[in-house]
Structure formats: C-alpha cells, structure tokens
Length: 406
Image 1 (spheres, rainbow, N blue to C red):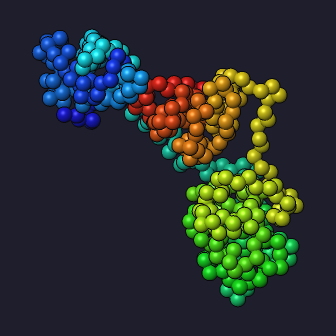
Image 2 (image 1 turned 90 degrees about the vertical axis):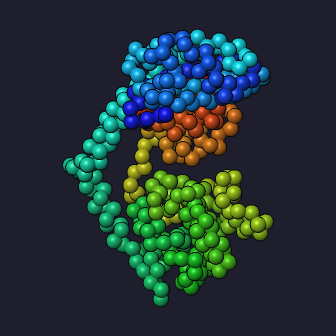
Image 3 (image 1 turned 90 degrees about the horizontal axis):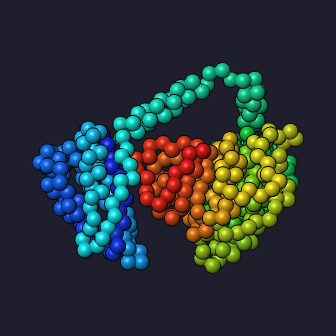
C-alpha cells in the first residue's frame, strides 16, 4: 500500500552485487534479511501493509557478470524511524545467491521539495503578473518601430494575397506560407515577401517566381514539405530555406530567420531528394548550405541582434572553465570527456538535440534551471554530469550522473 499524500521521505539506496540478480531477488532480500531485526513495531511487512512504508522501486543494470542499481523506498515514518529503517537495510549482505553491498545514498525530504516547487512557481507567477509594468524608453521605441513595420503589409493579385511592400519592385523575393509569416519577417525588416496561403499556389506567385530570384522559406513540418513540393512543380524556385524541424516561421526570432536564410539550399538539391523518394526532412539535417548571396532584403537600419559573448583567447580546457564562461549566457554547452566543445545550444534546442547525442558526449553545462525530465534524458544517454544554474523538482537522482550547481 502506498499513499503518496502522506509520504514524507524517500530513501535512496545504491545496490552492488557480485553476480547477476533480478528485481525479485532484491525485494526478497529486503524483506527476508530485515525480518525480526528491529522488532515487531518496525517489521517492514507490517509497515508496508499499514501504509507507513510505500512500495519498493528497483532499477538494475547487469554488465560483465555484475549487477548495480538503485532502490527507492517511500516512508511516512518520522525522521528517527526512517533513519533506523535505512540503516537496517545496509545490513543486507546477499541478494539471491550473490554477495552484495547495500549503501544508503541519502534520505530526501519530499515536503522540502514541494516547498521548493511552491517557491519557484510563486516566482514565475510574480514575474508573469507584473512583466508589463513600467516599459523602458527603449522598449517603447522598439514597439512603435515594430508597429510601423507591421502596418506596411500589402495585398497583391486578384486573390489579394498578403505581401511585403517591396515584393513587386525587388529583384529577389521570398515566398512564405501565410500572412503571419509575412508579418514576422516585416518585424525583422524583410519586406520582399509574399505568402501562398495554402497548397494551391496563386498565379501571381508563380508569375513573380519566373521574373525574380526566388527563395521559398517554409515551416519545418509536413505541411511545409507539401507546400514546397507544390511550389517546385508550378513555380521557378532558385533556393529553399527551412525553419528548424517542428518550428514555424512565424515563431522565429530575427536572428534565427537571418541564419535560416543564409543556410538556404539550391532548389536542384531538393528536387534530387524528391526524385529519390527520400523525405525532405532528412536532407535538412544533413546538408551544409552555401552562404547567403544577399538576396534577402534587409532594412537600411536593422534592429540590432543580441550580442554574442566573445570566445576567450586561450581555449578552455576544463569543465570549471566552461562553467564560468557559460554564466549569464542563458544557453547550454555539450562537452566531451576531455572538455572539448561538441555544441552550443539554446535550452529549447538542447531538449531536442539531447536524444541524438552520440557516445562522445560526456556532460552538459547550462545557464538555466534543470528539471527531472532533462536529468532522466541525460542519464539514458549515458552522460556523466550536468552542471546547471539551478536544479528544480529533482525527486531522485539516477545513479552514475553528477548534478553540479553553478
């Protein structure tokens, strides 16, 4: 019987056995070798039956004829009784037929974790509730400038499709999926755009593509792939730019948009991919595209991009050095075992890239809060450590991964 509402503590125990054992062997050893050890009042079976001790969770990994793992026991006893129970479990000397060693890694106060969550959530609510109070002068000017760009959206052709104000005069155009994409590029100062508004390509778009240097910029999803295939059939496309898979052009920042346009792919490469009946999404991850030739029209005085943090003159050769460098960046860095940089990412990008890391990755440094989900994902990939600005909502730490506060 396990009643989560009354659980106070979580006992975390490390298991090592000189042989191959299974979960049933561990559970049997826990009950069998503690029976009668602490008297009737502290009999583990009776405690579990009455709900004062929760179910026993076991995770095991067997390698090279040995077994290691973790055991978790939830307790509603008081502190002293929980500590006595944990100490009693360390007297287990055999699991199944194998010599074993049981070590209590720690006893977590689950109520303290809940209080930490309450404090963190209260901070978020406080920031969300008052983030509109008191705009600075620069923020007011930025909003006014952005509004002045947005109102310049136009409509062209018999279908009155959304377009940027310079799409008819410019020598190069960018074809987008919808009105929201046109608006977002206008916010970034890119005015030579036109939207197709669906999979049926308007005649004016096809006509413009035959007269101008044309780049298609689509969302990173199946809908974007379908629109791209339609455009390749009915329009004269020179290059193709993609948003990151799973992202929409309308949600991208100015820096992300400029980067995607610089990494555009020649349309002939896409056509070859389609001719081989291979998914367009596979190509997006593999290809290294040429630098942008300047076709995308950018305003005379574009809004400044976020400043990049300069790299140190001497290469960083330690985890501590990387941790110090990453402070204040709001980003994450993946390192190899010898502290070589394998990649720098935003926190969102890290969540997407983590499942695809190879065996060279040894650890992560992140200038952000790290939660249980990311810890579990890093453990599954075999990473050795995570260094983070904060660890929030960590109920249990998987064995073999270090959590390092920055």
